[in-house]
Structure formats: C-alpha cells, structure tokens
Length: 454
Image 1 (cartoon, rainbow, N blue to C red):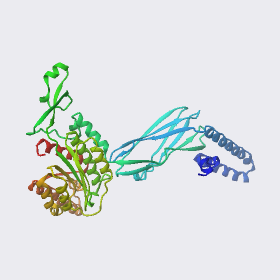
Image 2 (cartoon, one colour):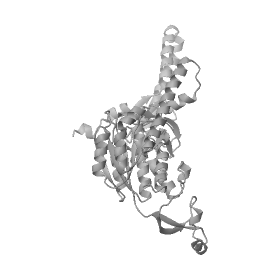
Image 3 (cartoon, rainbow, N blue to C red):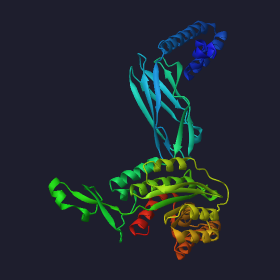
Image 4 (cartoon, rainbow, N blue to C red):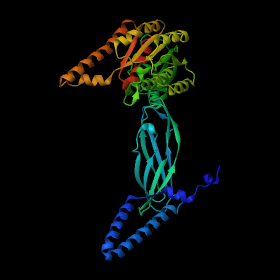
C-alpha cells in the first residue's frame, strides 16, 4: 500500500470537501457587472474593488470557521441488520455538532439504487454541542442485497458563503428478507389472543380433542368458558385454563415460482406476497404446535424442507424464502405431484400458492390436484385481479368502456368458476386479493384446524 493512500494529500482533501454556495456565485456575477460598468464610469471602480476585497475576506473567514475544527460534525446512519420486504422500515440519521458555533446542515443520504429515489434530502440547524436524530422510512419491494452509500453532510457556518462536506457510514450492505415485521405482528397478536384485530376470525372448534396445558392469566379474547374460578379466587385476578391440541399436524407451504407469479401489485410480485404469507403462516403453525414445512417449484421442484417444529425451523424457512426467485417457465405440476408423493408420506395440509387467470389453465392441472388431494388436504390459493374488480365497479360511459367491462366480467366469472370446480372434486380453494393474502390464508388454516380436517 502506497504512502499516498495511507496519508491522503491534505490539499486534495480540502479541495474535494469545499463547496461554494449559490450566494457567492450571485455576488460574483454582480461584481463582474460592476467592474464592466466601472470601465465606462470610473467612479464605480473603487467601491467595486472594495466590495471584492470584502468578499475575499469573508470567504477566508468562512473557510477558517469551517476548517479550524478537524472533525466539526459527527453523523451515522442507524438501521436494522436486515430490512423487511414490503414494509416501511425506519431509518435514522444521528447528528452531533462539534463546532463552537451554530451550523446549518444539508443532509443527503445515498440510499440503494433499487428504491429509485434521489430525494432523501434534509435541511436542519444544530446549536453548539447539540445532537439531533432525523428519521425517514424505506419500503423495499424486492428481496436481495441493498447497498447504502455515504451520508453526505454539507455544513455552513453563520457566514453561509462556503460549505464543507463530510461523509459517514459509507458502503453499508443490508439484506432485504421476507416480511419478518408482518410475521412479528401476527406472532404478538397470537400470543395475546388478539389476532381478531388483524382480521383473523375467531372460529369455534368442532369435535377436536384437546389436553390441559396450564393455568394462566386471562387476556382479552380468551373464551369465558375457560375461566378457572378457583384459581381466580386464590389469585384475586381472572385466570383461565389453557389447552393445546393433542396431535401436531404437518403444514406445508407449496410456492409456485413460475412466470404466473411475476405479476406485480403495489410494487411487490405475487411471488413475494406468497413468500410473506408463507412466513407468517409457518410461524403461526409453529405457535399452534404444528410442524411447518416448505416446498418451492416451477418447471422443476426446487427446495424442500421437511415439516418440523424444532426451535431452528423458522430460521431455516426464512433463509430458504430469502433466496427464491421467479423462473420464467411454465410450471410443471406433474413433477410437483411426483415429488410430494415421494417426500411427504404422512397426511398433511398443503397450501399451494399459485395463480390462474382462466378456467382452461386450471383444468390442465386439475388431474394432478386430484391426485395430490387423495393423500393430503390441499388448499389451492390464487389471486383476484384487483384492476378487473375496479373496472367492474366503474360506470361504462362509452362503447369502449362497455367492451372492456364485458371482458372484465368474463375473466371475473372464470375465477369464480375455478373455485366452484375445485370444490366439486373436494379440493379447498382460496381466491383472494394480494393485499389480503396473509390474513385470508391464516383464517383458512385456522378454519381447517378448528373443523378437525387436519
């Protein structure tokens, strides 16, 4: 390593960090005009010359104020070790003023190129020895590695003619994982029996045997019938009997990675919606003492994780989901059927995330669905076209609008036909809008569990 690299040229550093404000350029243009006028009117020359020397003096004073303190400001970017896909992730910028005078700051944060934003810009003031925290949020819509650049701080002294640039927190790489924030939200609500606040329905268990687990404190949402009055009298607070299902069930999320899952909705692809829902559902299943597993497929079967409820299972699921990418090929359901038959031998709940736009496309895969449903409880999850629904709800004002609305009604009717035809063969289905996928999938799982179908 060269000495120049170890000890950067201070003159070069000074030049690279020094910026002239727009005010100086404005004054400079004004002085040039005055010098031109003084060529014709000599009486203007002396005052103009004096103004020029005042400007030079002020620039020297400003530069001394900015550079007499070696590290006049400190800043750092604060964020989590990984970002949550599809969620608003908080980002903080911590600032400290080490100058012995108030300063004006212009802050530009170089966020990853995936966000396609160049407006992460802040203006603020810091008094002597004052610190401040600026906050904003980023919503990634793709999984993968995101590289943050530098936090650029441009400092102005009270003179405000020059700016000194500082750079902090450069070259920070942060991975974007499936929506763990959504997963935690559902987990917290499940622990406190408040899933209904997220839209999860309370379903009465039918004919399902349970065994006593423990006596615990009552929380909002607990069944009144489970109150243990003797324990309540002893503790002088409401206590309830907690029960758990006697048998753990296998729950598998089967995720289609074919081209039909590339369709975007509010920035996220259908594949990412399916991945986020699978993570939440797996976590809820593990909380319910079921075994969670995973399988990905497209033109061939991808990764398979056998259902389990060990402590590290959720981390394995998260790591697998993080790496999934869309394959732009036709999905092979025959390979899926063969693989499930060979690798999932115990009767399980299989939640298959895919998409069908037409009845004929579903019918081509129906024989394989029927074969899978012979050995397992299969739920086929596919998506509403929300743009078609909004078109159906709008008024047709001309011939073209009537034509488009007729086509939309045809495709909307076919989606309903898919649900009915799957039901005829005893196959469960879930037709849902992408934004409601997670809550509707959790509802379906809890419904199957309450009805004793798994």
